[in-house]
Length: 107
Image (cartoon, rainbow, N blue to C red; front, side, top):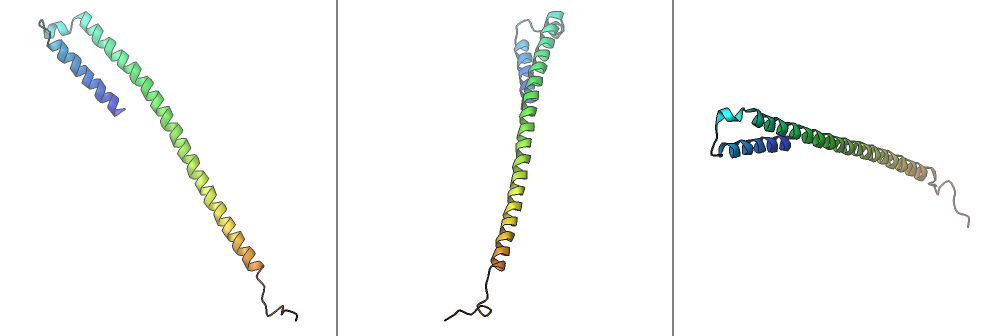
């Protein structure tokens, strides 16, 4: 959005510079109805285009944020499942270990 503002100001300055370079430049002529209509039309078109670009960029940003949240949630669930699997594996190894003193082999 900052880039769009910068480009808008740059284009407005360029338009004023080109108007200033006209051989019949006059500050009074700048405020004639035909020139004011051109300025207002340019501002209106710029606002319309800026609004559309802003709407699209905001929608894209919201979708990216949603994906980041889902990815974070999936990582958290994966870590929880890994912890549960590690605890279950540890529990099974402890449960199934046999002590040879209790069960001596038969010869």
